[in-house]
Image (cartoon, rainbow, N blue to C red):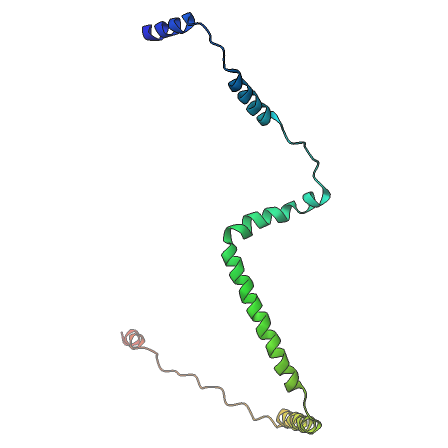
Length: 146
């Protein structure tokens, strides 16, 4: 404690020196720059409307960019494959009139067969199973004989 008091007393005895004017200018300029606050602008409608999307983008997409890019690439490949398959489907759909007549005849035959099967006489139901009067395990026999 004595040391602290001696130090403070020495500081009080020293005369204050003037600060160099160049330093003073620099310090005041830096303080002035820090004090300037940009003007407050009211948010536009678009800024408030799309704020949830921007938050979603920052929280979901940015941390996992590679994952989302790979998912997008997979979707692009799926789209390309589906477009290439659609050409083959349209070629298969173009059926000549002769094959259309064959298809019609085959479907008519199928309908006739289904009708025949539905109209077949039903067979008599089988006899119900006879009850088995024998014991099912050795243990029951032992109880019966005891």
